[in-house]
Length: 253
Ligand SMILES: [Zn+2]
Image (cartoon, rainbow, N blue to C red):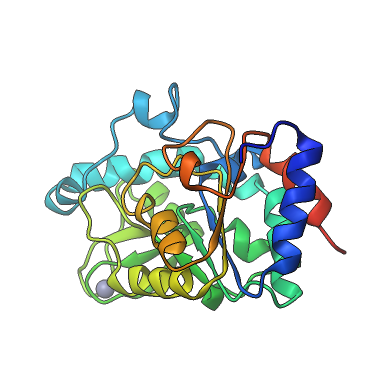
């Protein structure tokens, strides 16, 4: 059913949430746009102006690593300022109520953690941009440290003490999906009885696979997204409306 208006959507969503035993939210860029994080893939988004740097190029070239970090620091003001939105807070409320065993996200902005989810209960398919890792030894670095080194070294990206390249903990184009995250996302999807796809166009692999998997395992499927998705017909409830507004009634304090 495509909800004809917000009132119908809220009532239907409330029924589904109240009747569910295990809810797994799957979130994409749309949940964070009200927090000031742009959807990089959208028309006019950052990636249409600036071609993303592929993983192989990052590895092969020091200049690409410098450029990659330069772009990241340009974005830092937005990321540092962003606070969880109504959608994040509503999901955190359901999590605190014991209804959400875990959440799967395509977002890299750390806002689900800030909203109250334990990091261990979040599966980040595309990683996290708010800290960095050495690609060789896995040592964690804070962005402030990388930036200080970058600025004081003629705007060149620092290397790890082991000699490895340091990169934000995101999954770049051309970089393998983390196998463990994929496996955990599949487990959560298979075990839930309500799958909430929120703010994702569900076109980028592997996002597209999850709604189908949930449905095939007998879960109810809800899609909340401003734009139609190609899975709308499969869903039990489709809401084409502002995410914050749809989820705000589920925020509990
Ligand atoms: Zn290292």
